[in-house]
Image 1: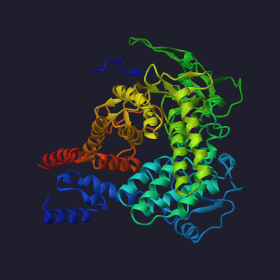
Image 2: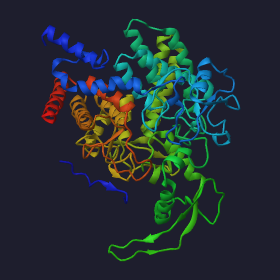
Image 3: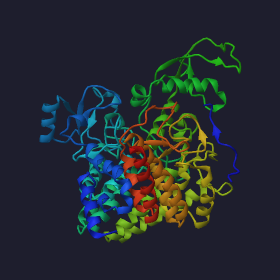
Image 4: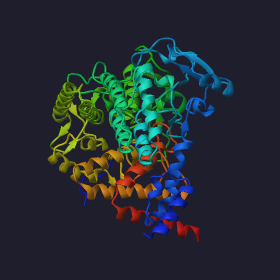
Length: 576
């Protein structure tokens, strides 16, 4: 029994038969990988067919009119090319066919933040050379960290060429936009997202090699781009104080454009919360223009809510704004990918003051990957350098981010020099990256109960009203946690948690025929009640599709057949 304190709240097999089955599955639209399902897995055929078809329905290219559309801003369509990049024939075609305005960026970009998106004529799509898979819905562009999990799914489904094309798009971004972007829209030119490039490179390289097409020349090219991408995370302003670790940081100022247009009232809620909670510890609210205003003014009324039905006493409305430090934290939170959660303080406002477990674990993995690639390419001296970098980062993670008393890896506020008390699913990233000791892994497994729910692992133990907190379960962190458990030999736990998450997705798919971006791990549903950030649960969904395939393939055969049987039985009941 879990004796922890209650959850926190922030106010608020016959050969002919097998052959026939394979033919039927291919006709249903399944990929070659999916058509290998055994007879005992027929109950999963509909969802695997959905995923296989989604790779095409979610594909965008510079010849499609729907590629340029931005559901978040709903503004006129503009396609931007790098300043020194001649317009290819495809651009002329899309300009004519789709009535798309085409412009070049004003300067050659060598790093993030060199172009102020607000000074461009209007926001728009940034050109990429290859087609790519988008997450879905409001996310109609190629994202930094989403793409890793999409690429995993593409490789699992045998779509090696499409996966490689997406990785090469990242090379294009590094060369022409200065870094791997949050996504290829102009308003993302100031920030990146969690670094997975080396994992993607090795995934494609190994898949090509397994298919009999080892491409060392491609790996050599990939290595040079990855080295450049790595440097961005290891120099100012992405350094976490004097810790030697890294932090999230956005080069832009003021409110993020997508938060203004697509997250109605979000910043007003932040301002109201700050006025009601002076104990927050930071004066994020600017009244009477006491400081330079970098965003908008909000009219906020503070009320003293009582426990009765009596009318609350309210103070007169105040015109306030949020200060520059708040917006820096908000933008850094968006670079982290966890937008919105209260992991870095309410609304993630102090994100840029932390050395995060997730980012530094990923950079450790990046360094070990670069060492592996160096060895493959015969770069012995480079391999030694990468090994030393990884060892140095590991030591610093152990020093600052490991809480031995609680048995958790936690984020470190380098400004106040205090480890965070916030329990968050990223505590399992060091397992995935392979930097935890066996004893630390044991301690983390003992703490699984903090996060484990009926539908897998919830993001946190805190109900804040934000989508990246309790009670929600997200595919990317689910995969990393489960693969981390497997890496350290905790296969029973990995199978159990994986089954919970997979069966939840499958049950919801059976009910509504879609796959969503997130799920309620407590109710095992796709219904969400988010009060901080955008409110919808987007259909698609790229990374959930990819993670479903990867987790399913990693399950032992008897677990897969159990899942398929369960879903098949429910489908039969529903059909009666």
